[in-house]
Image 1: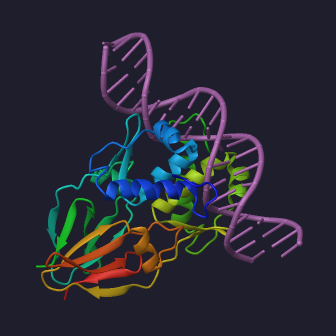
Image 2: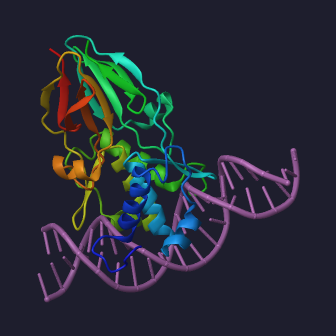
Image 3: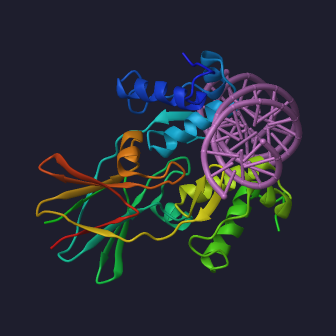
Length: 136
Length: 136
DNA sequence: GGACATTTGTACGTATGTATC
DNA sequence: CGATACATACGTACAAATGTC
């Protein structure tokens, strides 16, 4: 499974494995991942390695983690369509803590925001996992 | 400085402090942050706490970390303007490992991508820290 | 509501590897 | 080459959230 002598760090090797299990549907959207302790036993690595693995998958937006419960594969959310007005400009970046709270972005999720601007002023900030912009 | 008995975890308290130092210009864009060891001494916390602090600031896109060198405040990059065609749709998400490599996104940086679609097909994927979308 | 097991979060220590200067 | 700095990875302990009985 995991080769401690590989160039590739153990936590990345495990991330590759889980990413593959997600991609193939072995772990479908919404499915619970094994607990940290279970992963430790299954793959013969320490807790720090598991924690890094899950952190990497969170950063890729593939899983979310809830304290006292566990991690699960992210479930595609229904999209809200937002019209960008003519002359509008769009950027994307990571949200501030305030924006996370306002938009209800799960603390255990890594989700960017879409920023719509018009005339140099910000016209809207949207959680990217639930939003699709349209250009009429 | 940091109160170990506060409700707020030490690593978040330190993140607040550094975030403030960045916002006020005490640590301007491009400035080097103190090393992990220096931060340990300055704030009287352990390495794990520093690690988490820096991870949080990276996730917010505020700093980038380079191995063997250190962390620094991100520098705003010149924007490339990309025109979205009429009828185009835009999403944003975190990049895959492949996309990170293709777009040259620093491994120590957390940067989303802008995905431009037209007619259900992906027309372009852009690193969000260097791109602004426009609609003529 | 309480008691309990499970699970993740936080935070320390230690050691070794590797990249940069 | 050495010094510095971050990365990886193990261990340990306690705190806090969750779900179940």
